Amino acid sequence: MLLSAADAFATAGVETHVLSTGVAEGGLADRLRQVGFTVHHEPFRVSIGFFRSLCALMRRERFDVVHIHSELAFFWFGLTARAAGMPRVVYHAHAYFPFEGALRVERILQRWLARALLGMTCITVGPSVAANERRRFLNPSKVVSNWVDSDVFHPVSASELRALRARLRLPRCASLIVSVGGCIPLKNHALIVESLRLVRLLVPDAEYVHIGTGGEEAAELALAERLGVGGKCHFMGERDDVADMLAACDVLVMPSEREGLPMAALEALSCGLPVVATDVPGLKDVVVNGLTGVLVDASAESLAAAVACLLADAVVRERLGGEGRRRVMELHSPAAGVAAWLSVYRG
Image 1 (cartoon, rainbow, N blue to C red):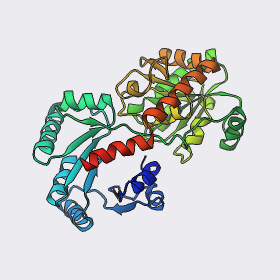
Image 2 (image 1 turned 90 degrees about the horizontal axis):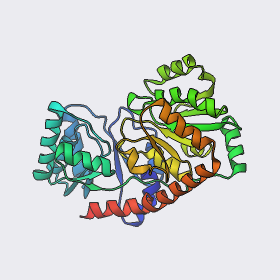
Image 3 (image 1 turned 30 degrees about the vertical axis):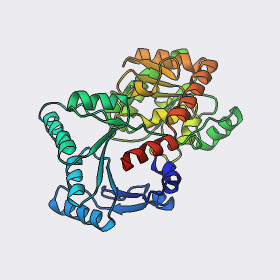
Image 4 (image 1 turned 120 degrees about the vertical axis):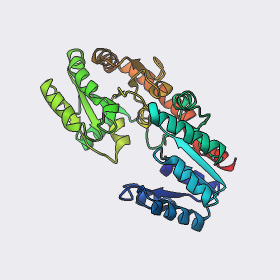
């Protein structure tokens, strides 16, 4: 999102800095520098020293706005920004946090103090996250939607599709379902593997392409072997050509337990792919049932039925994918996103 918005921010006269708090800078650091961002790196640690260094950075650079993306320690980032004299602090809730018990109470208190004491503005990525913040944490917010560069994520013609699959070493004539995301329980990729066996009973050439990796990958591969579809599941690992991978497939599948506002779904729709997703917070903000995709319950049978129907009907796929791309270009463009953020930044 930041890469695609660099020119718009620069045109608006915004000097953009990014702070990486990982152990390493991260794979996007050099690309961000190339498009005009200044990248700072301070590995996060639970210590006064970390926040002292952060305070010194803010005072040195004299930022007009500090935009906090981290849920972990967001309050302490905000407190540090205020102590450093930063005039505007924004907290950005990206996810649907299901916190309960003592953690929920802690977050209610922190969010109240952030508003009342620090004057922080809370921004949420979509309606489900906003509703969760309001109901669970008593926290009012403003929605600024995620965006997608539709010039990068775009459909391809039939001839381009054949060439693209050949270059990416994907099955050239198969019906391909795809998922994008880390192999973690929240993403529920095991359900896709389970449903693939059922899909293939109706669409024999169906195969599964997975982009991403994580702790559950070995278990998902083992499940595929046990179900007899190991040879039809292609785990591609981390990729920097996600747009091409999506455009080369037919249907995106997202059986997540919940989402914030799912970038993978927006990117797939921008590529003209319909989305089959579970009817859960976040996903139902993007997938309009019967219009841009299909919402299902979290069962292999429901998932398989919806996927098989789409794979078997190219006309319906094209209609849903076309409407999905139209909606992304209308509602989730970089220009609209940057304009909304400038409104927030400038108050």
